[in-house]
Image 1 (cartoon, rainbow, N blue to C red):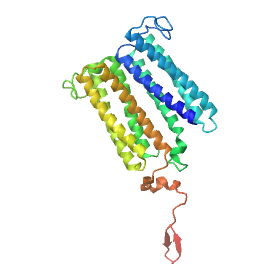
Image 2: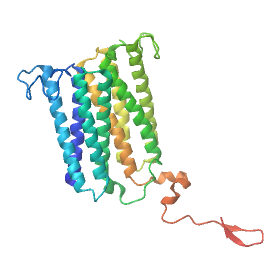
Image 3: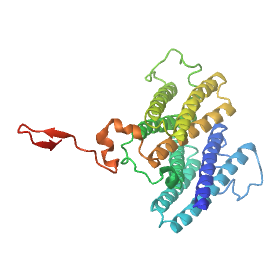
Image 4: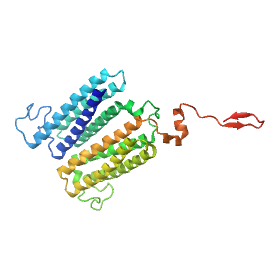
Length: 333
């Protein structure tokens, strides 16, 4: 298990690096650094001429190759450990499917000269792929986390529900961010938090509308993460790791908002734009991690506030209270 767990964690790290590096390639307009061809780079396996754009795009492809290799190794080890949990095989199989689709989208992105919709789909699938691997990583720790104690039925945890809402909002924000960057709408509003007197989409400018949608989604995602933190402290106060993750999420979201503002103030500086991508991906990964850990931990004692929801968890059913009937006979409720 230790080797399988280590391989999963390494794979998550490499995929995170691939997503961030892909953002750098997009931000620096290096996506066509290897020309309009794939998998060759300017007609060669290893390019003979190295420009900055070629170097960035080529390194991006090398990291993608590492992801393919690690995913294949995960599938192999998952097959060997399938007797311990069927998910050790199912999740790597899903991951292989993601890699195949991602490779196809990557090729289409190059052949279509970085079409905005395809690039956005490519980014979204990469984020979902990383989230899938994070779930697998938590599963390798499940026995340690649960201690063999009872769990709530899937979807019944209030923390998980709040996490799913925050995850959907964050994924929408990620898609809007990728589309905003790809279409050149990142600097459509030259000020922050205002936007040249505009507040809602429908301005007549596609670029300004795209930027406004991105900002509104950021607000929604921030509120959803705030609600998740509230639910964590309400139901998972006994779990220091989950509380720390939730606090980290809140801090990162605040930092992300100011980094986004700094992008406007500095007219989309490459370093800040790259940091924006890195933080967004980290926030998404931590959201998935919170939900996955919540489902691996035992059911929180605090859930007893709604006894019907945890009644099945008790090893001993509640003792019926005595009831005296009209004739004096004693019964139970």
